[in-house]
Length: 149
Image (tube, rainbow, N blue to C red):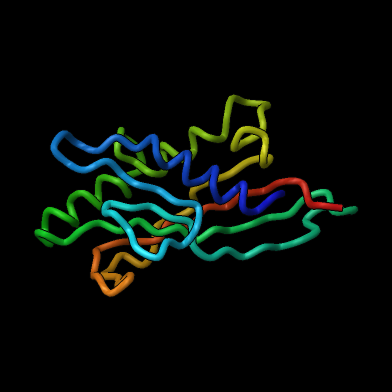
């Protein structure tokens, strides 16, 4: 798998989120940005397990992604975050990202990986990013695909 391309594809998938009227559109990046325009989703750290199948047949990556929401009103910001962390619905990051799995039998992320799964939410808290504070959370996304030989 080409990791930078997978990171960009995850961010692109997250762009499908539709927030309620009156809220800014979710911005997304496949890398850790210097600064963000909230609400913002980005792909941060990852762990990689090589050789899950013989002959470099399969690698497994678990990406830590973050979503940060502005804090003009702490309760309203957390309500927006909760919408994005829901398991389904137009604002659900899980639903938007897992649409990139493709149809049964297709490769995920437009052919970049075999499959992906949004595993869990963690780290729901206040984050400092580029000297600004946001309410946010992490989503853990497992991606499996062909190892490079």
